[in-house]
Every structure is written in structure tokens, then in C-alpha cells.
Image (cartoon, rainbow over all chains, first blue to last red; front, side, top):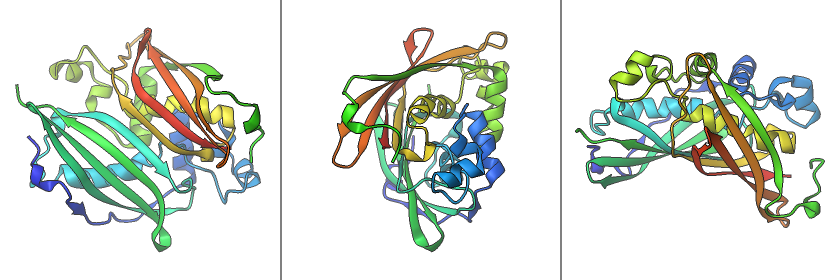
Length: 147
Length: 140
């Protein structure tokens, strides 16, 4: 059972994550993207970007770093072996591009209990240099209760 | 601006259907790219020990693959400004045959004033829909 008292808890900003061009290409191949904007610097620049653009779900890599902090927080008491991903959303103020240095700040938006199960929703705000909001990632994990 | 003329679009219009073949290799590749090394995505023995029928795809892999239909239509991955899904059913990936994900996108909503459209995605595995409310908002 997730501790309901962590609702509203904010976790400190993660260390900066430098988005690499090859990391974007690797991730793009993994999600079966063939979009030149993800892969080809010249195509991305011709479309007005400074470098290759990350696929729409790439922010999960940054979100994960904040989530790891929560999953390791004894106060939240989340048993990772019982976690199922319920839903996920990424709202982009602008796309992530290679060269971005990103930090994320996570807040536990809600903790709900449904019988033996808990549903925890996290809101992770991802910022580039100068506190520029790039993406808000919203993730709900379902934590199954003990049988 | 993209090559798509928003005035020519209609709600309900299909923008594309694509098949994606996921294999165990795809799962290992995604694990490495994303950093999600949960062994339920590459070890049958581990998956079975937690009550699953076998290895399943990362929900985030299914989500990331499905949106490619919208990306390919608009032609620019950076134009997807809001994308959300619910993970409703697992995609089991057979060690030999893998799994085929069939993704169809259609126009769900047109916001001509802001030059945005909502693409509703249907992702099916073995004729079962595996993502709920899969919606991508795209800026044209």
C-alpha cells in the first residue's frame, strides 16, 4: 500500500541530463521511427531545429530519473515489483532536441486507493537551461496489493 | 507549417495504418535505449515467476511505436505536442514469432484556429486493442 501522505510531495530537481544526438538516434530506432527529423541533422535543421529532435516519448528517459528517486523513497513505500504502468502522457511546450540539458522536478499529484490496489499519479516537469519548461510528463502507476 | 492543408481534413478520416513487427530483439533494443531493464521484458522465467504468461513488450515501447503513424503523416516528430495513452492490455512477444502491432490513426478533432488536430490511434495485437484513449495532438 502506497503511503497516501506523500500526495503533494515534491522531489528535488535531478542532476542535469545532457541529450545526446546518438542517444536520440538510438531511441528513435528503438521505437521504429524512420522520421528524418529524428535521425538526420540536416533534415532537422532544414525544418528549423538546431539539431535532431527526440521522438515524442523520449521524455520518459528523463522522467525515469525522477521516478527512481520516488521508488527509492522509504516514505512513499512503493513496491516496484508490484507496479504496473497505468497511463502516460507528455505535453510538450517545445520538442526536446540534441544538446538540451534537462532537469526534472517531480510532484506526487495524487494517491488513490482502490481496494487492495493503489494508483499513484506523478507530474514531472522537465526544464531546459534557464528554467525553460520543455515538457510535462504525467504518469500513473498501479501498485497491486499483496495477495 | 507542414504540407497538410487543415481545411481539407475531416473528422473520422483515416490518416494511415501501419504494421510493426516486435521481436525479442526489439524489446532488448528498447530496454537499452530507454534504460528500462525490468526483466519481465526479456526473461520468460522471470515473467512467469510474477504470474505472467511470458515476456511482454514495454508499454512505453508500444506507446512510442504507435505514435509513429501520426509522425509519418505529419512528417515531423517535433509537431506532436501532446500525446497520451492508457495501457489496457499486455502485448506478449513470442520468442520465435514476435508480435505484430497494427496501428491505425484517424482524425479525432480539428482545431483550425490554432492549426492543430487530434489524432486518435488504435493499436491492436491479435485483434485486441492494447492502448486506451491513445491521442496525439499535432500542430500543422
